Length: 283
Ligand code: ATP
Image (cartoon, rainbow, N blue to C red; front, top):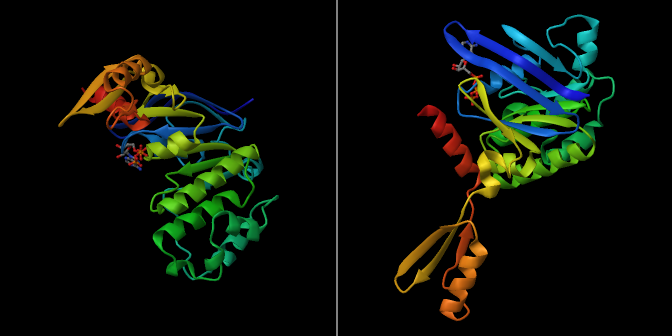
């Protein structure tokens, strides 16, 4: 069974048509990244799946459950999911460890609090008051609260905003470990390198519609896109766009009798492809 199944999802705020007919299936155990510019409809979509926003129409199943349902079944369902929102409410007068302990009490099968603190690298701060944490440390605590319940499905809304590069790498390793444990993860991010490092599949959303769903390496025809070969010839940097970079490099190698000065071979990055896709839909 799929972890998430969405068909024909729509949501408007007055005249703003935030989500305009989204279909999406996310497999159990998959890491799926939702990409899109500011205001594209990512948070609206994700918060409908989390049961925090109402929808106008469409079918939604999350772990086999309609998030619109209330009562005991909804509480049991909530116990199986973890959520890291874009911003969380303040409980500044508690320490890190107290806060995680407090949240772990909401779940029937929580992770060990010490393990969670270690996972997000907050050991040195476990007795610090939350209001004394830096922005990035605060965000790591948000992630800790999302995983403490040992969720089957984890929602991460821009989880690494404000992280330094080292913390971001550590976070990626944590997410890969969770994937290894079988956790399904739906991630929204503005960092294309993050999507590339983590996601099995990415979905690009713009103006409330999904433009394409694909693997990071195949999005927008990326895997078959032309490569750009550049090299130096005297004082000039030359370049050639080609479907067969090996042939170009061989030709140059013969020409230069071995070492080709300042040779580079590049293919479009996920960011190049993404920006092209977003740009095209605005034309
Ligand atoms: P970002 O990357 O900036 O977080 P997003 O893709 O998550 O953007 P949404 O927050 O889903 O986008 O917003 C989609 C559209 O709906 C935007 O035009 C936004 O202004 C509008 N919108 C979102 N929430 C509300 C609300 N509560 N009331 C009115 N309009 C809203």
